Length: 434
Ligand SMILES: *[C@@H]1O[C@H](CO)[C@@H](O)[C@H](O)[C@H]1NC(C)=O
Ligand SMILES: *[C@@H]1O[C@H](CO)[C@@H](O)[C@H](O)[C@H]1NC(C)=O
Image (cartoon, rainbow, N blue to C red; front, side):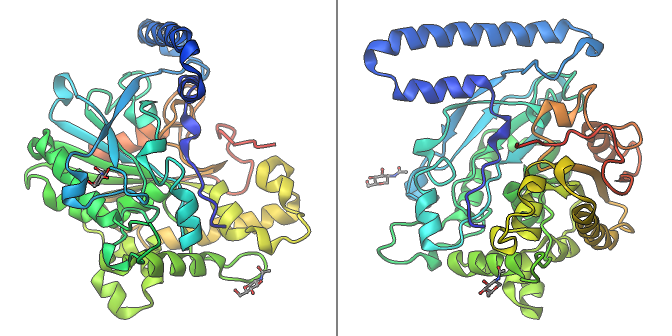
């Protein structure tokens, strides 16, 4: 359950080239650099080429390797904003242009949570706990793409990807650090330091802004949405988008509250209560206040939820976590929804029913938009193939990107709930891990 789930599935081949670079000996270095130059030129070329191609000739194999360098936070020691291992947190920034030069999209990386000293210590040695292990260049795609064909409404905005290295959705507090553990719990401090730095490089003059994030980053978006609104100019249009961040407080198939007890441990370990809504904390057990069903009740800023009804992360970790399926009957279903039998689809549909009942509470709120498709996937804003392309999932003939744009720019009210029961939507991009 505590597995540090990485959401970097959108990494392109260029990223793997970088990982390879690190382990090569110095004698191979020149060759590696040469190969990289070639790869980089090729990706630049394919990028330019795709711009001139008509959308109808688009294919899902063309990756727009829009590589963006990692920037480490200045003065991390001074502000006490540090990753789990004490290294400096970072972000990737690409400047906006044209009519987008005063608009900002800030996207928070996901990657699960750690709920114990040992799982956080494991995380220290990965990119989710230390900037020493982060790729120094990452591709910007989907909502972060600079290609208008792939990202029609936000392509020319300033774009930031905030790296996730605190293990607690940017909500941990140093008071909870344990002497001698060698772990830093600075999520909230990192959030504030990142905001300060972005404000200083132009965000303070924003006209329009969107805070987004996927998975644990989608949860961070919900936690910090109203604060984001607060630190931006009053006259700016500010909204939030949570992608696959709507984690449910549901029992697993064996009747255990696996997710609730997991969140309980995360909240306890890193002292998250201080970052959660005070009214909620006063009324109930703090770990319940980490669930989006509670957080969204108190959010005042306009919000959009992109969420798959068959979120594979939730199926694997909330509905059917390891211990709940001792005979491994769900093993192949968890890898590919097409392998699920009718009985399992029934269970998935009742999970979908719980999701819909929960979000239904927010249907009346005009400023809340939603796109809930009946697909087997996790994050859908970060990849071209799910965000916006001829092969992207649609509801009422609209892609995720078009739906988010319709809501952000008030082109229309967007409450798109997909057909019921798999496989009713043929446009789904369903994951297959077999
Ligand atoms: C913080 O300061 C310590 C001691 O000077 C140093 O070893 C460490 O690398 C610094 N960390 C960062 C993130 O700058
Ligand atoms: C259910 O939870 C209890 C208490 O946390 C645990 O001891 C038990 O192993 C769990 N059962 C399953 C099937 O996961």
